[in-house]
Length: 329
Image (cartoon, rainbow, N blue to C red; front, side):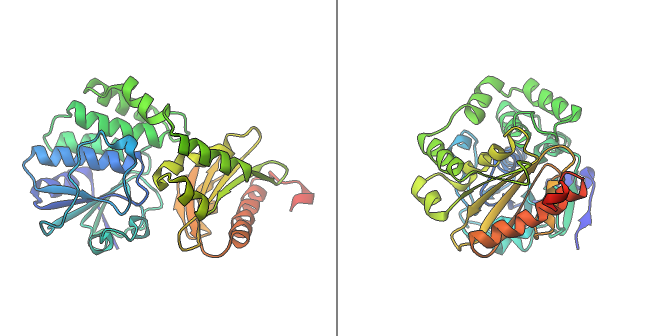
């Protein structure tokens, strides 16, 4: 079981460490990569031997970050995970599990964190793990440069949907202001992160929308993609993440579901909700977790069984909040 630590302790651990390895979660998004990039640059400033490891390739839109990828040229003495809520989220490529089983420090913002690390710095009130990283870096005695600021802004902006999601707070805007003052180029970063789509990305969005279905009198919408569609498109898994907002964005939809088949045939399910409906409650009953408005899980079996399992949990959650009529119960 993990030991919860405060920021002062986490900073002390990082300052004392040498030969450091930073781990990201699989299908890396802007927050895990942004945290890793910012922490890497900060530790490098302190003269540390440090590198980053991820199970999956990093999407091209994040390739402006300066990162040294782990090449096994040294044996890590201290392993830190950023924005990773459970050990299953590390993935199984690039020998990442060897190090995931011995994480000394986890820095995270997910209330569903499983406590897999020896020590955990957790702030479930933060919109992004990158929010936490701002204070960590400054308390390490490192000034936030323009390059570090760009990494941190990426994490904050992507995890809040460019400050549109319900996890956005006044504290989030203050954190963003700090990194903007430190040199994050908002116009350039926002254009790159939110206004650019490849043709392949648009094509797979079209395929996903062709599968669109409604349930519970339109209160739930679902899209899905097969593994063959994903492979044919050539779109990296991480770039598919923003597809999860599509079904929820439809007028009248309380629960948006995105099902993506994995290579082994199982389905990765993303849950996005509005109003009082708790996305985490839906995912948690299926072995997953996340936040109240955004959560996920993985289900083995075929499409029909995955659909049935998640829709049953959606039904229970809608019923709990009195959002279903008698004929739908």
